[in-house]
Length: 321
Image (cartoon, rainbow, N blue to C red; front, side):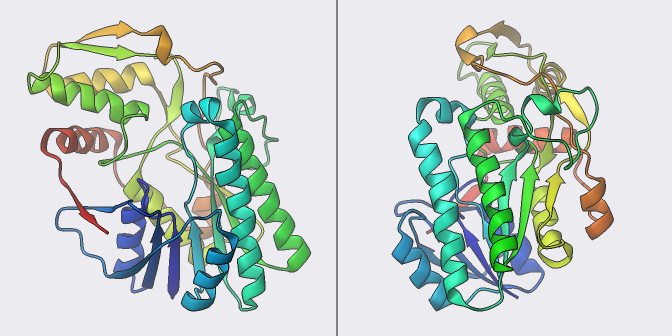
């Protein structure tokens, strides 16, 4: 299969490229000028890369005509909830206008092409706060600008699928974690602080926001396996949850990180780290994904946390681009 990964300069890109290449795909990938596509040391992947700004409508069309992909994985996004509060216009431009530019280019290409639009569990918002797993039939109630932009992407994808008979699948990815994730995301931040404390680089104190919130964390390596499975066995026009199906509190995650770091660390609440609006509980019902693809998560949370701590201690990524 000729697969194109849009926005491969982000956290997930290198993992997805490796997964697609390992199954035999001819892989193409895009990144912004100045970005790097990151891989683990020793990870193997052959692919062709190009620079692309998803907001450049002409450039998007030209790229698709040159590559002629059979499947597109749309990762390009402003994916930080915190940043979406600070830069709402930027978030809307990238996540909504960028999606439209891509779908219009696919439509103009005139050949069969499957598109996976990668959205977020944030779309469910307060609707997910039910103390039980949330499935794809629950009406979303987004609670921040990022979530609203991703819900709009989902709705645009559904519209293009129905109006133009395009092959589009939407994904609602729950919290994914792994080595290489930026510390603006909570688990990576905790692991970075713990690694720096263990290395004597900071005082033995981790500063936190709301630790009572429960989230569904999945290793990024399992996440990209789900994306690859959906590209083959997903049903066009459908939305799929991708997550572990097990919510855990940030308190328990932090306690495990401290245990794995083998360091005496104190916890200090920092009110500046609280979100303006925060959903207390989010857990994925992944029955639809499992039923249609046979996918199951393989990497336990403890291993993920250990790998992330190891990344911050040792810096184990290689870069290309």
